[in-house]
Image 1 (tube, one colour):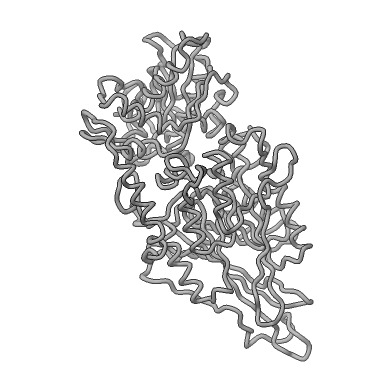
Image 2 (cartoon, rainbow, N blue to C red; image 1 turned 120 degrees about the vertical axis):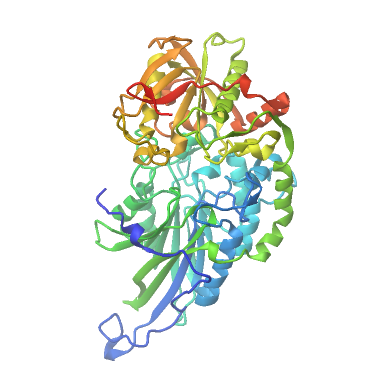
Amino acid sequence: MPFDRRSFLGRSAATGAGVALAGAGAVPASAATAGSGGFAGGRVPKRYAFTVMGTTDLHGNVFNWDYFTDQEFDDKAHNDVGLAKISTLVEQVRREKGRRNTLLIDAGDTIQGTQLSYYYAKVDPITAENGPVHPMAQAMNAIGYDAAALGNHEFNYGIPVLRKFQEQCRFPLLGANALDAKTLKPAFPPYVIKRLRTPYGRDVRVAILGLTNPGIAIWDKANVQGKMTFPGLEEQAAKWVPKLRSMGADVVIVSAHSGSSGTSSYGDQLPYIENAAGLVAEQVPGIDAILVGHAHTEIPEYFVANKETGRQVVLSEPLKWGQRLTLFDFELVWEKGRWAVESVGAQVLNSNTVDEDPEITKILRDEHEQVVAYVNQVIGTNAAEMTSVEAPYRDVPIIDLINHIQAATVRDALAGTEYASLPVLSQAACFSRSAVIPAGEVTIRDVAGLYVFENTLEARLMTGAQIRAYLEFSANYFVQTAAGAEVDPAKLTNANGTPDYNYDVVSGLAYEIDIAKPAGSRVTDVRFEGAPLADDAQFVLAVNNYRANGGGNFPFVAAAKLLWSNSDEIRNTMIAWVKEKGSIDQAEFASVDWKLTRDGVPVF
């Protein structure tokens, strides 16, 4: 990319017992002189300062709680999560800056990700007659958000759930590039203009433009096809930013559910870039700041020069789940009859430096306790503990369980059809390296913690040659390691930034992955029922909708013939399977079908 990644050298208030905030609200500068945008005769120019706070990728987190482990959230860096923590930070900023000199926005992925958000989409849905108000709407309304962009995960539960959530929010959900498929007009408000009062009688008009991810057309195809279309961020920003300026916007901020890197995970299946925030800054003049989302990375402050004007645009992405709060600090000066941005910088505050806001936890205590009771329901027993700790580099029973259930579900679905006699293979990935199904009683949260995404199941028709190519692509996940070299499992995976969820294992076959060989020539000795895999053999692949619709850009699967699909989450299918069986026995499904080798010698 033509712009560099200086973001990681930005400012981050990651430690400390409190929050120290610099700057005041609406104050005239005392030391400015004529010639710096002031008035004739040396009069002091009018200046005004304000702050825009931002969150992104909240993913249903209100409390600092992990519903999958049933305990307070914690990670290796001791981050905290949730809107209750964010609320405390927000109130501190408002006290320091003056409430009327602040705005609060979000960059999307709000209503999916925790069992709290799942419960109110599926178990006690907000769409039911006289249904509940979504916990995220309750919390964000109470905190006082001014606007939020749509994220791709807003569409996971279907448009009716999203529309109900939109109705329950006391702030607009923005999506300038979420268009009605028939009219090609915005299906959501493209922007909102907020007015900030200054001591000088002339308000500052702040335009917030919302942009979402074009990958929605792939990832949630079943929910949006024929209903909405999602053109690229750059082209829609180029359309709307000049309009906002012509409408009198003094400041233009983009809230973009799109990473900054200029990359895509779905290859060439769409002509649009997934992570386009940096490109928007570079290509579209008239933008002052971009709140970045989607990529789940921390970017305190990152400057991109606009190609046309040369002006620096500041980008910032706060860490996911409410772990960070971005602050954009603007300094404006009155010149030539209008407010102009003199400077803008960004930083992030860490939510682990503050306590949860008791007002937020009080509002949602009942909902939280309801969900805790739900996820702790016992649904069966397990003969021996299974974990995913070694799943990224070894064939382990806990991943075999996913594939076993998926394959059985597809076989049942195809019974009596012309495809019933075809062998069924299944793909699965390690979504969490900390998943555990304990020995003894098994609860909903044990099973849900193994499959943390709201993926649904499909059946696609594939050939042996296509499956081989699929496996080869997946094997790019491993770092090339010479025969005889020391193997450190912690450094063996995630080659080229490939996330764990984009490493698929396939059941129903036996194969080896030679990590001493370069990418593209690693998969060896692929066998089906003991014989070498035939290129022209036909198989049914049980595959999640994310992968089937192009997520990860795996070869052939997105274009493969669809034989069957299901609208229920794979997670629910797994929970129902355990309920029906009553017990989990590894002898029924566990086997070592794949292994890592070097020159034919097993690594482990």
